[in-house]
Length: 345
Image 1 (cartoon, rainbow, N blue to C red):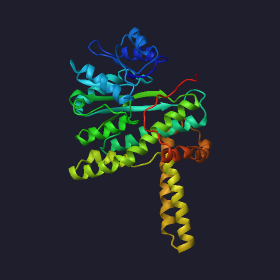
Image 2: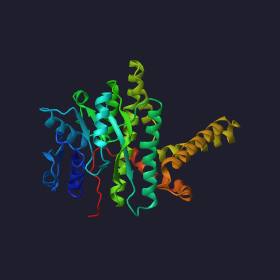
Image 3: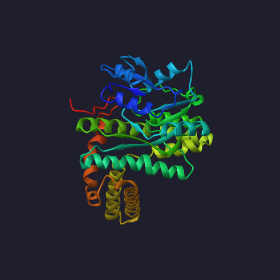
Image 4: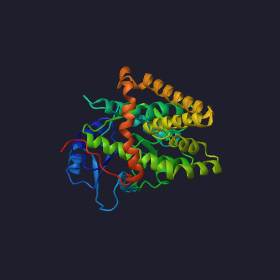
């Protein structure tokens, strides 16, 4: 359990996990660059704790690598990673571990982010979009026999694979990078939808905005820098798992994808006006229709718990509000890991 200044939640999280653990299991908390009581509270709650202080190397990946190095002298059969702000359903840990041992591949549980009670439409829309990506898309890929992305929490790794990949990275979406690295080895992650790992979006606007920026800038960064090389590697080595994961990462975040569809329609309309050719407009409208249909099906499956039918008319407003985030990627992108503030100070 990597933890950076998680004094508000660490004790409850440790106690909740220990309630589902066996006597031979170890819960290791990596108190990473903390300046609060995270380490002390985790020990009091019953966890084994190692502390890491490094003023130059920041990020969850470095915390994971530090914990792995600590365990290496007496390695476990399976390494599970659970974020400090997450809750796992009873027996979920054992199910993830058993599946990792059986398949000898990384296993990803169903990681969901939920809007806090009383959360506004923006947070509820975000919860819906998160479920579309982490639940509906991952389930669809699994149904086709294809791998899923690693999602950052609720991950299980056979120790034999842990030793073959470097976790020590400061990338802001280190989980996605790890998934691509394992896939390149021929060990693409497997989706386990029967185990739910849940957390909440920050209730304050600053924390939610920071978290959203980190995820979406990280996604776009991987799309631009890593996906082309992964596609080439996958074709050369006939690696279907890596090819599928790279294609999945090629899909932009939902709001940006919707914006690109609108831009495509405008270009198609311009082509129809100036050149009297309707093909680009027809293709753009078909693509936009397919996207709307996919979102509608996703809403029927997982979105009704968060967004009411009449609130779907506010989706364009949700999309427009995110445009500055994508403009910032061009001129002031986030490249370092930043702790999400969950409470107002």
